[in-house]
Image (cartoon, rainbow over all chains, first blue to last red; front, side, top):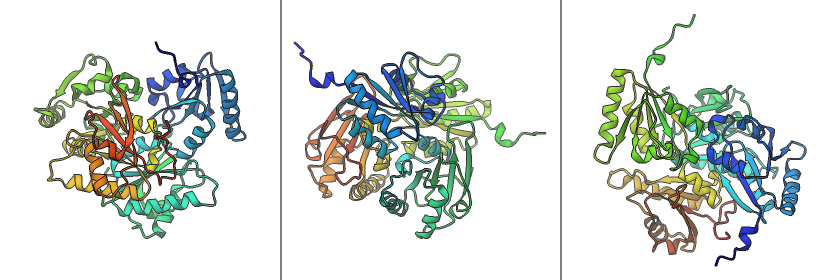
Length: 244
Length: 244
């Protein structure tokens, strides 16, 4: 006879990728996971791909003022109420490590699962196109306030990845623009003629594609919701960004 | 007045990711792209996530005997007939570079676009969980018959990625099993106690998860549809595969 286990009695938290911003990219798996949850939490932007707010659920919005505190508060309340939680994430929750690590700590008494989503990284790689296995992914969103330690690690990894023949896929953050990345790479000795592609607002109505050199990029401004591809001539996979 | 361009008159080919194998992961964007195409081509396995064959389309199956020739033949026929083609790909077309490069060559007279899908790589990373920006992705599917050149490059990249603190996400192929990868890594000097996770048949009913050391892995057999994660203790993102 099956007697159950303590794992079964834990409340559930699902971290759900809802894709880059339109309903076109929300998988049935993500919709089912939302339907199976009691409370739904996210930024207003994270609810946008759903079209409308889910019926019959407690909806909790994160804002700039309280986005960290409200997650901690909700976790405590949900644990007491044994409520299941869906945490919505634009794109794919697997792209932003800092957020994921925080959630693992906050929900350590919950049964946690992650539902991947289509990311802006994938949409942008598809425009070049480059294979993800010939790329190194970087995210500046969020970039932690740690005196620049995380940024220095990522920049070291970038130069290294280019030297090893990889393309770079860089998710822009509010504190690091494609312009800043381009300036750094040129300063670090990367050829200023290196071809790049920037997809601004990937998957949204106002999506734009810019193809130019690293040098040209140092003079261009983009929305914080952009992905930069630095295309490596040495990659065994021939990218075609300069031959559209 | 808008007068059109030669680009507009090219026939269209869409390379469409349909996710890891069940309808749960097929995005509305992929379904729309299939609906907008005249001919649909893929392996029998690639049609499985759709549940049933799309109505009112010419359906072309690839098989072991003719999978390359039939793509070339279909491209020629479709160009003459000005038919739009959907090429279905299990998972995400951006994961397998060799296939993508061939398609770019074969369909060079077409207007090509890629619709990303959820990959088994993402489903497996979600099980650990590890962030994709702390991983290097490898695929042995397909592994070209090139005297081992591609395999040697990938193995060199693997040791390198581990030394630099990355986790490895390795898509198994028929010619390279997790066991072979584990044996190679131990031989190359990687600690045989390094924690690993294997997701066999990700996203399918018969999905299984195995957590063990690199050493243990050298004695285990898995289906060719498996993803291996080699978890790097040095990664700044603390993975939890050994603390389920």
